[in-house]
Image (cartoon, rainbow, N blue to C red; front, side, top):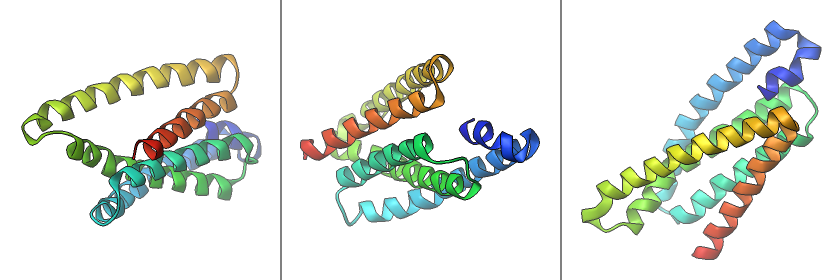
Length: 159
């Protein structure tokens, strides 16, 4: 939405929407690619630190969307960061949970993790939408950046 909204004045609604859809597809392709990379890195490095890195990258691209001018190349870079973040979190979150759970409780633990993620996604989407509608897109991105920085700090302190 942000890319379409910001690029429409310079590109027109159809081109801006098409380019934004292309960026979203590339984000998902990048996420699959980077999930593989972070999965391999998780075998060699701390999964906790890799997860913290994913949250930090999330906060960086949120801040990027707040302060960057509407530019195709900048947005392509921010979407690339989003793909890295999505891959990092997808690959490491459940691995971190597996390390924390006893083997005989992993199924229940993963179910609880998925439930909490679903509730969190729903709640954060509503909150971000309200902030976007009532205040601005930047307020929505600031909300995400702040929460991601808090999560990063918790993971780093929790070591």
